[in-house]
Image (cartoon, rainbow, N blue to C red; front, side, top):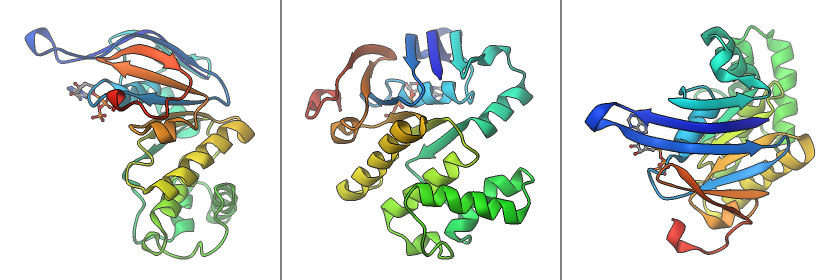
Length: 233
Ligand SMILES: Nc1ncnc2c1ncn2[C@@H]1O[C@H](COP(=O)(O)OP(=O)(O)OP(=O)(O)O)[C@@H](O)[C@H]1O
């Protein structure tokens, strides 16, 4: 579903050049849940941005669902972002003035889906994340974990098959964080969504099928989940 081949990403040039990602080769299978860990600034977010075609690699290739992103025009990249790739961030970006249902409907409506149909699809997406009640309430009426689930429903709308989650538990307590990560694991296992989740917390990484450790932009280890390794925080 997602492949990095000898990927390098630098920002700036000459004496101000920063190597965010260096020689990363990595494959994420369909339905696989991969956690990415590593110290601050090691390139975790950059890896996600490359997968979502939000950044272009300086060298190497990024392949999403069989498409080499470099071969796609900007319009085709935008289409891939819209149809295949979902994002979840630590800050939820839910719109406070819209209800839970309206928040999830929004991307569909912006894409021209008629309201009635958008409502139906959004309800189904919310049901998949375990929310089928009080959908006419506003984000502030939900707990942090429920809000993140609304954001995940919105990210997955339209059957996206690759979910990029950047610290989705960052603003949550352990109980809510666990629920969100359990949901991500279930989406991978039961629906074949490929999930790449950046996290600082070994507890949440332990839900993943595989954990990738980055340091200074390089993959330094790839292993079974670590439960308590303070050196990688
Ligand atoms: N747009 C940019 N311009 C210049 N440098 C950047 C840019 N984005 C990231 N960097 C640099 O690239 C490196 C990797 O950044 P990145 O955000 O990918 O790390 P990270 O592991 O996600 O960090 P954190 O855990 O703090 O979010 C850092 O040194 C960062 O300062």
